[in-house]
Length: 424
Image 1: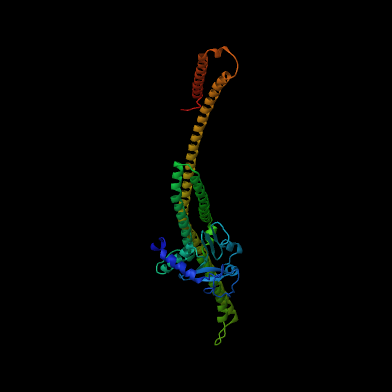
Image 2: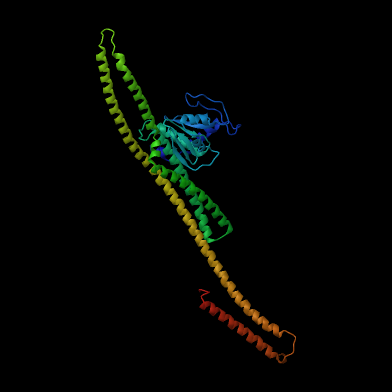
């Protein structure tokens, strides 16, 4: 039993994919050849644009491909049209698990199916997840012929759908972790446009994956918190209860008619007064027995329903823990990305501070050079003065001007240090 829950063999997947691809006609896009009969007792319809290909999986593990239109599926499974829209592959809907009167509508990632008490109708597709689900479910149903399982048929199918959804999402999260960690480490070492673009794409993928995982987690949690929805999903028990009630009504009707038929006898005449009293006594005794039996049935059904709700709740809780762990991985990965972004912002801020410091020093130096240039420009004018009579005087003016500019520059630095403009 443990081997059937391990990762699926690649050879089985390839073989199943080849089997399905051989059954389809590639010349007709969106339409497939009719393979196998539809529902028993229903009239087969011709190929219309409303027909879709389904994989029908029975309790004994047998499967076949059928083509059914929307009206036939709605009539057989007692489903409204809005529930079938959730399974339409042309539209993208979030993950959903709905319990109805005679069916469970499951839309988890690529697994889109309708589960009844006797069979599973899986939306046919060449996707690997659909092929794996069909193969694994048939395999488990064949094995459970020889190994007893407490879970009813609908819960075994639902469990496998949850297992596939959790496994698929967890695998995608692990792949994303393996891809994004080297990129983030490289970005932390060297900030470049290429690395930033790669991180941006990974972050978008992470956001979409987080929304999908969060939706599955919320759907399971909402289902666990609603006992009424969980009670609706016990299709086998409801079917057995309905059958027992129908049989009980038939027995009750035949018992009420039986005494009246057996009162008369051909060989011996019976008094009308005695026969009437006997009929009343029989009817009164049967009513007491039927009331006692009905009460015991109701009490046992309520007790069994409570136990079954606990059983389904434990099943959902196991997969809720798994999907919650996957969600925590995504949140940790998001925090790692945020930490890397904070580190990058700190580095960019440090570089910006260095540039501002250099710009400030350069501005102060430019101001002092401008003062020195003004002095030289004054002496470069064409006018007569006693200063030009001796050549050494010009050298003294230039030297004193340069020294004053240098001292003024040192004063600027000391002022900046005092005001803590430069922390170092």
